[in-house]
Image 1 (cartoon, helix red, strand yellow):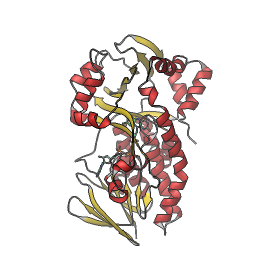
Image 2 (cartoon, protein in one colour; image 1 turned 90 degrees about the vertical axis):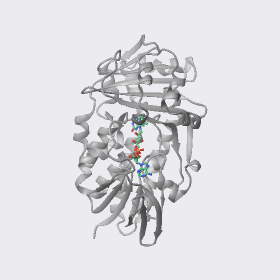
Image 3 (cartoon, protein in one colour; image 1 turned 120 degrees about the vertical axis):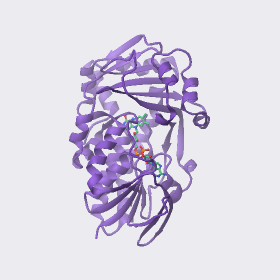
Length: 386
Ligand SMILES: Cc1cc2nc3c(=O)[nH]c(=O)nc-3n(C[C@H](O)[C@H](O)[C@H](O)COP(=O)(O)OP(=O)(O)OC[C@H]3O[C@@H](n4cnc5c(N)ncnc54)[C@H](O)[C@@H]3O)c2cc1C
């Protein structure tokens, strides 16, 4: 008989888990709070173990079709005057074939298409209670139904409900890094933004990037230092952004003026730090377990890679789910800890604390086309596949 897994959350982690487990003998039910599939999101680089896992799960070609393969990195002053550009040939050497620039929604599309025949998806639903005994977990859902499962995967992101139910309140595990992020996908490239480029206007305390994603799509994201993230969240994206990016600024000013809150990703930049990711047959995966933040540039890779490794561990111990979860965690934890460390160390790259820090961040980028600097930066980015 196929084992039943209830996966909470249809983001990258949840869909990757549904694909990996659904293809290999499990019967996944994916429960997603949103009323329908999300689109857009923001631009991310999928790399390293994420691409390795995507290849093993048969979705690498689908991702390769949707990636932006060639782009310049242009750096501007806040008013739009050019500072310097890393030409696409150098960007290509930096990322090699080990970093795919993608929209989050496209990664989810590719995983969803591949998982569709192997998993049931229920939208507009969440989990309200979990109770486990030696033989399984009883999962109560917000639609009034309940399910008995051999395994529950909490892939419901930074503000995970599964974590709250199985491990206690978020405040116990969330470490705010003192920054905010807002991101939006745009129907087209804003006037004044450069075609074929990911363009960043950086200054002390804040950064704004517009990425030409090709096919008439573009993505923008803002990051800024914030002493009180809770106050920013209470203010909402538009007010918080307006305060963080005041006055006339290249492209950002018009974007903020036209911002639609419901289409904007807006949150504090926070890590989740836990000393265990599973309790019996309930396991957390992706941002729910270990959010490394956008500053680490590796959360989606850990989500896909973590899902593939979870499947491997369950294959190795089919009769003992809790033991498989512990073995999976022991294997993955060193990589996650290292990526969290890098995320914490990298805050200055997105919101430099001083003009000196901004200049020091820019120096290697200015020289990125020089071969020894290219390899140095490439090593620092650490996108390599294994
Ligand atoms: C601006 C930005 C840039 C980034 N850049 C990169 C990058 O370059 N490289 C990289 O690897 N990573 C990057 N990341 C991080 C990466 O996107 C995340 O780590 C990854 O998407 C996490 O996926 P997830 O599925 O774990 O969580 P999420 O994407 O948060 O998905 C969680 C899902 O669960 C659903 N959900 C939430 N609560 C409930 C509930 N109670 N019940 C049911 N469903 C629920 C949500 O609706 C969502 O569908 C970036 C992140 C941001 C914000």
